[in-house]
Image (cartoon, rainbow, N blue to C red):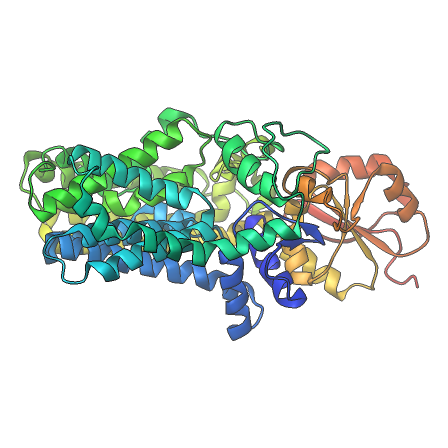
Length: 564
């Protein structure tokens, strides 16, 4: 657990320890970027199970399970058992859901709330629905919860998709539709859920209102400006400061859905033959899913994007793919052959990699064989570029399991049909994800700093200094449950909060660090590969004592272990 995972986990612990459930803080510095519900849920998990890394992951894991169940139930209601099964198996075993729930981000929860919004909307306006009022309440509650998960985007996506749907159906100005949605009472429910935190945070971090469109270093305008203007408006316009994020090229943002929905994305061509304009429930649902998907993809085409920003369309695409898988069109018959060929190609590539590294030594941990590309790490898949041929020598077991998984997928596609084929493909993907999990364990010394946190816990007490920004060693804060000074770390995520009047003074420059290091009091400094060179240039080597090293990162002290 490192980077954003440990950040979320530590914020929740800080809330539990301090009793302040309004303002998120890291190392005593206000962290105003995100909505609070994921922190509250993690803190609740801690209260029930204790403070553990696995307990921090329970809310995201449960949200993933609920998302699969909700998608299945939605499709079951709209299309029947066969397509409901297909849609459920698509979202449960697609690569995107697995990949983006390995990270402690609230997007799977956001996706669940948005899926509930669209289902509740459709149930509310269905003429044969016996309880439209209950579903309008569910719609409003989902919007309010979404606001506490991810901000305004949780309302914008359902509102945009519903607007486009009603416009195409020529129902946008239908009084009957809006009466069934109970807009006024629904808005009151949304405000009752979401407004209290926003109001409290605004009053806790004045000034209360500021609409400046300029974002730059050293500026502080309170919570309202940073959260609504800087984090929503200026980020959309790519004018936000600090610019601690990257953006996926537009063509890749669209095309990567073939990977995120793999292996079922091979059925996308068959989806073009489905009915969308008819008036039966299934056609209406497919049309709504199309509007839902189209709005999200087009919106983020004009904004800054991460790979997982489109996760809210996964349920919609799962239902469309579930319908395509149930047809008898030409492509629905060709798709398994295409998928089988992809499986065969993957088996061949894995076999070649295993052959090439058969005699390659794998000493120590995998960090020795990786090449760092820090500029790419603002993207979710940035670390994929660190892989080298030698690094696969550390991944032989995951590669073998992945090869078996793709072999099973290939055989299912070529020799089985229907539901049995889908089940075997799904089981093959489960095995592939198990291989991926083992690979992540191999990467743990490189991505996490837990071994360094363990060394720090068992070392004599002293002042900890992080050589760089908080995120680089966030797992040390979590596992060692400590605070630290940040040496030249006043940038990116914590920069804005550091200018708040009640922010803890944890940032030091070169001169302050050198004075502290030479003061005679025991200090520790954590550095990664990029920071070690600067450390060696700054301090006398005779006052550097290595305490621990792991994954290309080091923990030094200014005093020998035996010194008092």
